[in-house]
Image (tube, rainbow, N blue to C red; front, side):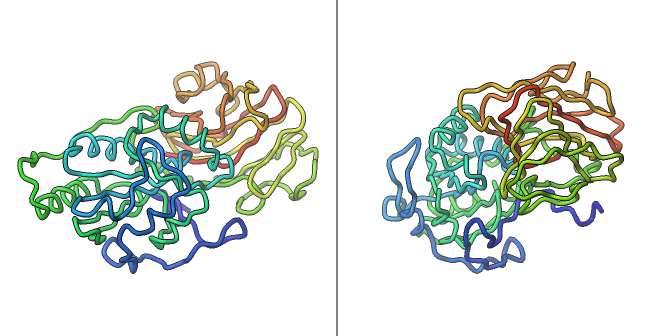
Length: 349
């Protein structure tokens, strides 16, 4: 049901993939973590900057942003963080801590590609083992931590939204730090593409992983880590999904073994995205999509044409559907014309 869907942020707790210290945050003002910026020293690499540790950041206002590049919630927050980094660049240090969710997001070349593609030029701390994440006792993508000139965390924002409140907090900390002359007006944006804000009014579908460890509402029995020929489901309820064709369902992802495999999903949202990529690098994979059995036409996302045709080139989030009104229950289908495709999760907006 819509009331049970957490749509503004992606939550990570301890699981079989990686152990994370689980100190649950109840809200913006109740975080238990007050460790300052010391955990930045645990980064496995840095992009766009030399390593930045708490000693180099003394006396500066710092905004820490936890992200992972396939997260739709973070993508919708990104335009604001980019704008703040540019607007306050003389006085504010923005650091993006890339803490990966999926295994391919640990590849530094993939992170480097994402940073360039998404126009991120502020410093990035690569956090492949989530050591910085644990140091902040963090649980969410995206998450913002606002540090004053003494390195003390003064404010937190978990999930999308509250952009005016967040910018006012930046302005307050800069003023406390003796920075004058900053404009009082707040950033006003109208993001487009995958960065456009979600259609919260109509959103009734939440993220769903497709690996067996975390998937929900799969319309068949699961053969874990084994090849199986799946038959198309005869019917699907809202937020249920299925497969047809020769697939292997792994812990994290599903792998298509033969061309012609399909995925189907009944959803209720303006936007539908699928995190996917080629299992072998530099191997383009063709696909086509339909909505309610027809080409998407005006409902196509930015990664497909109006006939529903597209190509998987790299492992990332693909926007496949952006439907005009009315937003109602729809049946989405994607057929892959080439084998070797890995899919990880559906997200909506």
